[in-house]
Image (tube, rainbow, N blue to C red; front, top):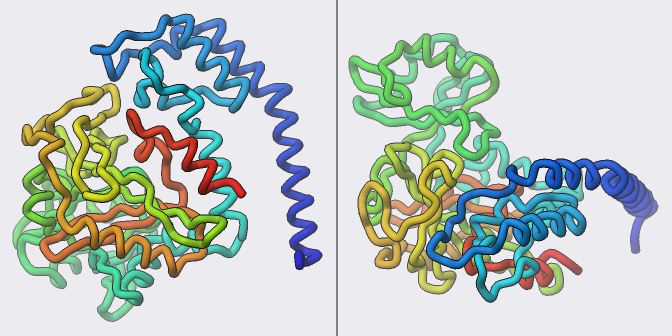
Amino acid sequence: MISRKGIKTYIKKSIESFGSGVICNLYCKPKLLFKVIVNPSKIWKESYFPELPRKSKLQILKDQIINIILHSSIDEYYYMYGLDVLRDVKNSEYVIYRDFMIARDRLNLSDSHNDSALLRNKLFFESLAQTIGIPTPKNIAYSENGDLMLLHSDGSFSKDWSRLKTQLSNDTVLYGKPINGECGTGILKIHISKDNLIVNGENISYNNLRELCLKGRYIFQMQLKQHPEMQRIYPESVNTIRMSTVRNLHTGKIEILPPTLRIGAHGSFVDNFSKGGVIVAMDTESGNLSEWGFFKPMYGFKSKVHPDTKIEFSSFHVPYYDEAKRLAVYFHSFLNLHSIGWDIAISENGPIFIEGNDNWEINLPQTFDNPFKKEFNRLFKL
């Protein structure tokens, strides 16, 4: 039976949804339509698939106008999905990001006191993972507004950041991460030796490091040693599987969506797509990579080989893949969330869970020739 509080919450959300819908139809849609029609050049971009016959500019404009009318948004991944070229797939087979985001957040964030906080806070994440036996990178220090605490030590804060090297052996690499950071933003690669402190390639002082972390909270993790195969495909970053798990609304069973491998590139020490990394679709059953890897347009669109190591993607198999799937489903079973996007590294001994994201994005599992609309309707709608 639905409680009185539940009924009030439902009515409130319905009114808010109705109000936002009215505002969108009366203001946002017409404004966006006007911008696109007046200046259509903003939506005409280079194709990821220049080898295929392309739609006319008028048809591309028509597609995006339909998106605005139906979904109140331009499809920002239109070109990455290959919707600008002539082929059998239909636009309606893909999920536009705005629709996905609304459904994802409605299902994940409906309760104000939910488990998303355990994922978004990297300190909490490690504590939970270690408690249930999931391997994660080791947190060794925490900072808040420039004050540093060495974890597993005396539990006191200090402005003396040189204490870091007293707790570590020479030639240690740490990653400093904003505790609630996303998309690789603000990550610091910290190389500590007996005589030097190198942060993101620059030799600096411990006081300089403190100044970089003055605003906000940071967690400092030991660099993990990835599997030789993951090192072989690109050695400068920790390369991770993005594996999304979804709890079926009808059966309660946790299912795995088509995963992707995220690989660093162009000298970057992070594997994020937004920072120049390459994403490659994986076969859900075998863990083998598909033929094409995709980049943001400014980094090269797509390729069959890694730009640095020249390894052919279709020849690569991700080690410990079955174990990664098993642990992702197991981890999700402890969390009262509908869907989670996991970032999973592979070490010499098996999977290591870097983080989980309740606000994961649809563009990774929905790359070229992987439309998601059918699965979206099955898993995200009652």
